[in-house]
Amino acid sequence: MTSTAIQSTYSNLTSCAVGVVASDGSLRDRLLGALALAEVEIGACAPSATRLVDDSASFDLVILYQRGDAAVLIESIGETRTALADTTLVVVWPATDEANARRALRAGADGLVSEADLETTLLATIRAVRSGLTCVPRRLRARLDSESLSMREKQVLGMLVRGCTNAEIASRLFLAESTVKSHLSSAYTKLGVRSRKDAATLILDPGRGLGPGILAISAA
Image (tube, rainbow, N blue to C red):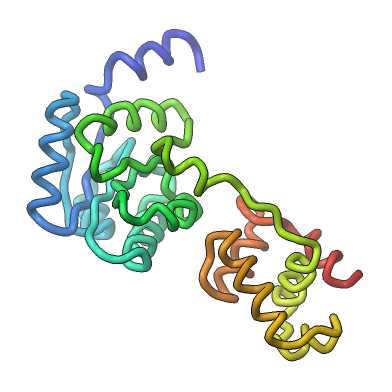
């Protein structure tokens, strides 16, 4: 990016086409108020990403603000990322759900804005992600630091990807099945996933995953 482009990104967001996905009117109004303070204009608002896409508008950035538990929020992020694959995505994230922030990034968020600090941090986050950065509140940093998988966890995950059941993994590694479950639970937490399917999908994802090398570890 040239110095002129960088200066333009930081000093002028009026040319940025922004879309909003908000699940209800109160969230939409708060978000519009925060954007008005930042002098950022909205191109379109919709209750879902698919409705936003149906408006046939093109967006440089989309802001997602939804209600619900972690599973609902992660699903909404995934749906928005699927519907708007090449669009920068900022997600308003509840301050009470720090533990799942890594899952939000893995689901496709480029930036997280704490709901409690929305009005004061939204503009800075927009500028950061528009410059190609991933942006999260500082207090989430500890939650986002990568936790290393143990060798045993990698072995178990590698066999999971190969399609082995817990019983088969236990037999091949000479472990109790309960121990296998414990290793998988720990690995899921470190990877930010919740199921065998999610773990396998992430591991084999060429852009985000651990790569096929983990299969060689499982065969060792």
